[in-house]
Image (cartoon, rainbow over all chains, first blue to last red; front, side, top):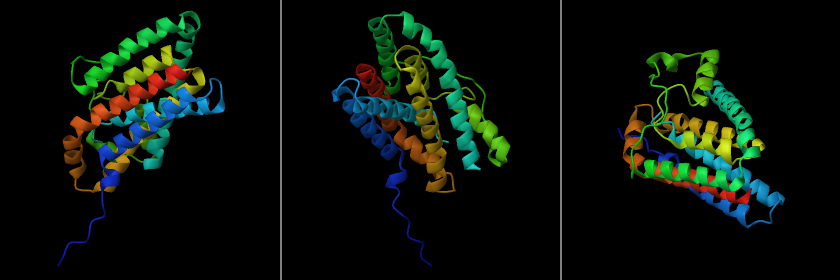
Length: 65
Length: 171
């Protein structure tokens, strides 16, 4: 009897999550800084950046569970 | 059950964000921005150095272990446990990044954005058990995490600190 094929797990790997959060944080942060001050783009970029910062902290605070 | 845990996480994180943002309104109104930026920058540099492993120092944490039977909680129990975990004050804190978030909300994050910080924290906190459950049911996730941790922690720290600094510069 052969073992069932396992689905690729790269999407679930913690490094994937960390790199994705880093990418979102960088894109949103740079957008916030480079957009016209007071514009919707700057506000949205800042909001997404702090959301990503929160997510990174929450993930790091989880340990292994 | 995970939905109740997630809802509890969100409630706990939002409550803490609200209280800290109210407390932060005073320094944000009275202390000049450059002074607050410098204070936050010092804190951010220290936390980044700690997460990367350059320095070691303790951060405030609740030294209580999570009991084994927590996985058998029903709806309201999961909601309550999620709430406690969402506050970040239920058990040990393996990272100083949550503490940096609190400092950011006090010093540099505008009041409305504090709730985005809370939503992000709850989502990040929820992601780990979701990934763990999806990975396998044989406990292999702990091994995966232990192997990845030396790389993952610095990446998360750079993401968190970088995002907060960029958001601060844009505000």
